[in-house]
Amino acid sequence: MSAAVRPSGPAGSFVTGNLPDFARDPLEFLEKASRDHGPVTSLRFGRTRAVLLSDPDLIEDVLVRKRDSFIKARSLQALHHLFGNGILTSEGEFWRKQRRLIQPAFHPASMRGHAEVVVSRASRMFDGWQTGDEMEFHSLMKELLLSIVADSLFGAELAQRATVLGAALESTMDRFTGRRGLARFAPDWVPLPDTRRYMEGVAALDEFVTEVLAVGRRGRVERKDLLSILLAARDENGNPMSDSQLRDEAITLFVGGFDTPALAMSWTWYLLSKNPDCVERLVAEVDSMLGDRAPGFEDASTLSYTQCVVKESMRLFPPAWIVSREASQDTEVGGYPVPRGTTVMMSQWLAHRDERFFPDALIFRPERWASGNSAKLPRFAYFPFGGGPRVCIGASFAMMETTLILAMLAQRFRFAVRDDVDIAPRATMTLRPRGGVPIVIDRRS
Image (cartoon, rainbow, N blue to C red; front, side):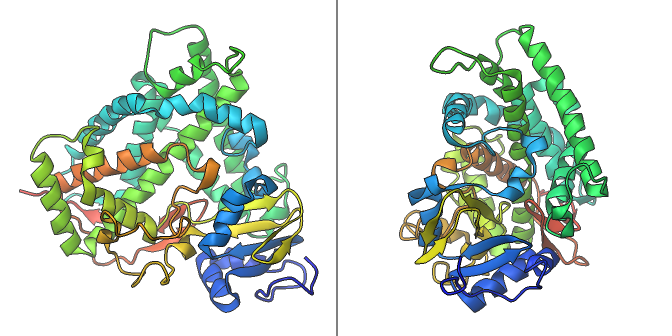
């Protein structure tokens, strides 16, 4: 972008641009940049030019109307050792083909079986919680969601082994965060601590998935886990996925399938602990519709207020807090030219807290999402799972999981966090509670 037409933006250092300020506190930096410079803000990270968009219509331009002019951003491409060429990172016709092959895994017929896994695994964990137990809720949700996604993806007999890979998955978050600073200029062969842990985690995941694929290739009885569906998938020419394709898609689904729901549940518990009136409405709905019985697949769509609670939690604390694209050709957005190679940043954290679309935006108000209340929202005022053709393929799976788990928590427990802690968001690859969510269990009588 030439100086004459470049939108205004915050001043940065001569060498690193805005990188140090962004790395120090990304959320505060984005808020101030948008507030001071408007819906199109010019940024620079080292030699990389970027623009920050904070208007829903402009975000829709990039993710929908002009999507063919953009590819996934370099920050995500930097994780190619982990995700390979899976649907999170691939582009063009290859991505479209892979998306078609994977889509049947999230058909409602498959989801019914996954709902049974959610309820079974959650019951097993919650039955062991006793009044007075002191716990860190986010760690527990990661453990639960890891077991659920491992069971749904690989099958029950392999789930226990898969859950031990949680540390490997956590290393990817540290890697993503570390690359905001000067470490972004270091290649992968430089033995930085975060990079070393990241590569060790990738190796552990590779070893496990390769072994699972070998077992699958030798033939298994008819199963309903996601990996079996992927193994059976055939393209229009009757060809199956290669082992490398299966590896990339399995790891993409594994990593994506646990983190977002675990974070959604953690932030939901925290927000409910601060809003007892909302808890009363939630408990009233769950008690009225479920009583003492366990929820099932059909309940996920009929527990309307429970769904509203989850949606409002993901509005205030969106697990995916930013989406980035890179211009693959010269284009323009918002009246400004966007040259090829420019990074375009779009933040759910900013959009979801915009007072123009969410009055009293910092207040937790689940009824915003009651039938009809959100009908007039711009399409990209709220996009917790991304948007456009590349919307998260597992969005309906994640909503089903979180709705059922929240209903089960409401049946059993009171929502409270320890009074002596202050929980703040930490923006890694996803939006995590700094220090976790310390709770003391109080079972409902």
